[in-house]
Length: 83
Image (cartoon, rainbow, N blue to C red; front, side, top):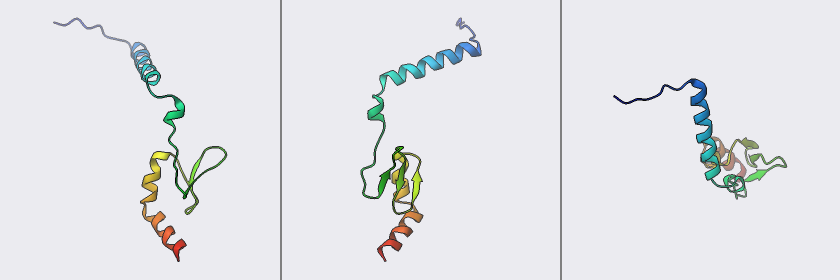
């Protein structure tokens, strides 16, 4: 039989917090984490919020930019602008 100690919820939370902190310290510096979009359709305001200049829609993160570009509503706005 293995002898495993049953941990309290507080101990488990502390272990998880330590694990997350150790992963954060091993990851890239915060400047490298922040992905910026280099597109003529993208605009960042003074607060660093990403938006689409065609749709006037804010995009919550840079990772969602590619999804926004291929969305139906964005394509419709692009077609309207071309006309």
